Image (cartoon, rainbow over the protein chains, first blue to last red):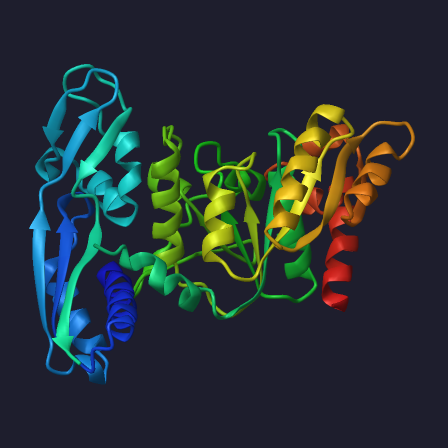
Length: 132
Length: 243
């Protein structure tokens, strides 16, 4: 239930946005989740529903997935992260701290661990919609 | 788009009395040994203490502690295991003895992730073993941890102290509290570092003599708590508890 901690972060950040934009009734929260972190959508959604405060009672949570693009700094190769290529222990380590991908994943072309997580790292709050 | 993780960090740290970052301008000055020994000393005095190794690329507190195979448990986040009486968190749980080749932005992201998902208990002290230098970890902690205090380590070398000057000046400019400066591996000579520290307007917390036996104490808590480092951390801990 590491997703629970991330859901708490989303609710805290969305609450800040709602407060800043003076939203009294939040109707929709859009969250983008990068594949690298392998967040379980259903668990995240469950936690978000359990945690939502009164201002969010009518809100819908939209979770969109983003593919993870990795870009090698050494040879400029770009490739997509594939969980299926990892063993369970490695996948779990990356789930908790996505940056440890640099320990386990190498550029498939040149073997360098020096790559950029160009897209799809972890969790982002994309949009908070509501009525004032 | 908003990174939601930073919004929850202050909540995660709410139950912690004081947060002390053991830092230095240069590496090899004894940060990890002092951070670990300080944490153990405070715990032996009856405090609830956490130790957080933020030196992601060169972690060593797990070796100093002899942490074994302890792992965090997953319960609405990550709950640090108790190692030698300390709530202990490190990236080592996820990389083992492999290298973690992280650039600045990755270091920052990993730090934010661990701050956002680690559920510390109610602690009197959280001691942080920092990476050397004034880099991402320092800047992130200043930005994200409201009640951070820095304990700066140096050796008698002017090369080490030059960086301490820069570090202390930056913290003073940003109005971030400096607990004081500790001079480690003192061999002989007059108290040059003491004078220079006082000229900076920072508190000199004392000197630790060079102790060739400290290497034997690595991984052995009993021996560690009998070193010259422990003598100094005992003094620092006693003063911390007076406040």
